[in-house]
Amino acid sequence: MIPACNICSANEFVEYRGRAGEQCANCGAKARHRIGLEVYKRHLFPLAEERPNGRILHMAPEAALYEILKDRLGGRYLTSDAAPERYPHAPCLKLFFPQDFDLFPEGYFTAILHNHVLEHIPGHYGDHLEEFTRLLEPGGRMIISVPGPYKGIPTREGGEHLATDAERLEQFLQGDHYKLLGDDFVPSLEALRGGHLIDMGISDEQRAALSVRPGKAPFFIWQRD
Image 1 (cartoon, rainbow, N blue to C red):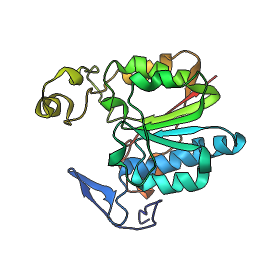
Image 2: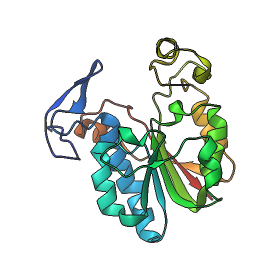
Image 3: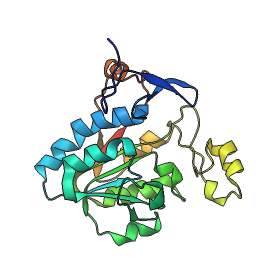
């Protein structure tokens, strides 16, 4: 079986940051984008069809996925970022979390998508997860991914208090990361009140078909009761 990109159907994959086969040579989609699309097919699109008036918030909308999601979800698909200029392909609302959590009432969104975003938000990630879940309507879903989470270490936070990007790079592996999520991340998701985790449903065989290494690019789907 020759791996193929599920976004553009290309069959060539190249190294990205030392990871072989990580990036599609044609459209640039990384492993988390290819896995993300499969997760959305299973856990987002059916929910959106059931709730045609529901709102979907996509934070830091990746160029590889934006057009697919916009075409599928239509006008209820909202995008946002703290620096909208970084996403010229999408009409992003300028939202800066955690401050802007207060802009939305409880249960405002049917789904919230944030992939490799949580590590960029200053403050304690547990507080942010609680706020995101508060914004979901009953039966709504938060679909997220984070770097790692890294096994064998506890979460480290506080990068917003460091003086330079170089310090953050050393401690959190990227100059604009404020935290490094560890062993406590999944238990924290499982312990969130008012909902539960759903299995993402992507096997390693399906990963291989998308040129993704076994167990990599995990997504977490939390559904409000």
